[in-house]
Length: 513
Ligand code: KIV
Ligand code: ZN
Image (cartoon, protein in one colour):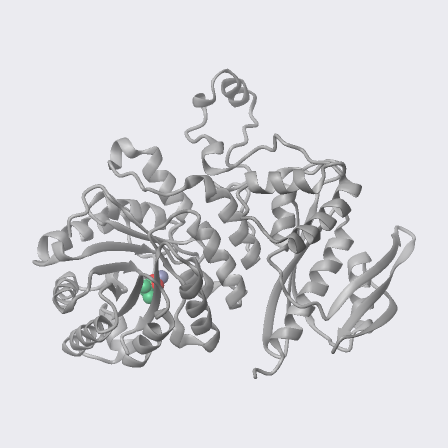
């Protein structure tokens, strides 16, 4: 297939990324993230593996109904039932793709699948033919391709292209490849597979040796025309190819690659934040492109150079990827109109008057404590808006006492809403610290006990009045949720995160109707 200088960007954050994250998202959360990823104007978004669970099926179906723009893709094994499930979930999508495949390395065929080469080839062809009944756009993945026999891999690709595959994916499933060798493999396939011009070659790399981006770029340099990646590089084990890194690599070195990905890079920073937030996986400060230090200069020589000319030490303009050092600062005197206007400038879609009122109330609460509200604070505030759960429990007030000579003590007053009735519960508890005391008081107050699996805290902005963001992971009866809270007061943020997580668990544990 002639694609010359076009590169197709295939995002798999919601499939390969989500598959590995400790925190599994519900379909509403997946939809919210899909909307943001689509603002990047990527070509294909892989949103789940419908046969893996009813929740994943629902998410693929919902995104297929709601998202218009990129091709919506879903994954299946080379099994008829999986493919049928993909087809059903993808039905509402305007453009859809079924991504099916099977292991092709000796180790996968012998030890996992217990099948001969002939059997694998037959299964692969049948799977593609079956998928082809539902959609023109069928992608085939040759799992563990980088540890496979190249002759056999070529035969499989030839056969599946003959059967109708329009894209062939060469995954480095275990992150084993080296850039030069992976590039050579792509080149060999282009040369050896007689009908390769009828399909797009796709690269899909894992990061076990920290080479996923390098390998993907080597594949593209040698003729691959689709790259599969995830926001922040999240994914199985050490992760996948990071979308923002591969895109900025191509753009920054277009002199070398001669390929210009057509995506909205202005949305990269915000998308990275949203994904980090939703999955509870902080972006390391020094992460390329989207880490908070990625554009900070500290040594005297560098600062001097950048002040004279940014280009002395910066190869990317941070504003190009939406990394804004807040220029606009809002305060408690900013009215609804000003807030709405800034949110629009930051790229948020218009929302209802009711939602605006909710955001504005929270904005005022923070502005009263913090005086100056930066863009980063607004982003954090809006991320909390993702949480659209019905609130069974909500915080009325809390009070903590702590100090070097005091035993940390907390009192909480919580409203419980059940079948339209409101009950007020108040409890106090001692703890190892103010947050521990507050959590123990909440545990005493509620007839719903949860396990705190993980707790993380970070500052959203800098300075004494920085907004603190707390992320918690909670579990109960085998269900796990993740939530966050932000406030200028870390105990307040901790309590908000804990209660929101509990509300999520209440919903998750409700029997399905
Ligand atoms: O890494 C891999 O091999 C995959 C395939 C299922 C595409 O994710
Ligand atoms: Zn993968």
